[in-house]
Image (cartoon, rainbow, N blue to C red):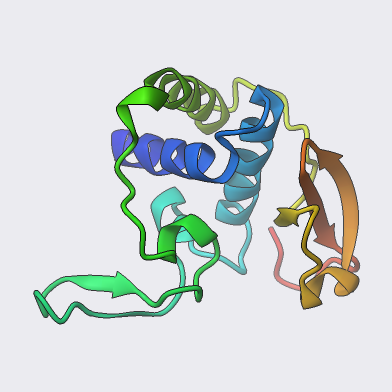
Length: 152
């Protein structure tokens, strides 16, 4: 399971922050871990990343695919290939190293209790109901304005 979690976390770090600094990759990975620790999200890395509505594939009804633009992390349901380009092998390796450090809690948390983030060039409707915590590269990170009941 640790290998599956590592690959899921690294895929998320790569696709969400491949053009960011190491801190940017760390930050998006720590949001995933904050969600894993929350009662409001699934309790494993891959389930947090893949959370959202799915439907059976028309090509293979036994395979479930995410509904486009309806998931927690945009890369996962954008309808594009998730294959890492050969040109980005060094960035992928960086994502793996960072993800292992975050997964094993060997890297200091730089986003606090952040549970959400978005790129700084968009303003999602939910942002006004959250507390901005930090901006790292071109992502803005948020936590609860008020801690909800049932949070670990």
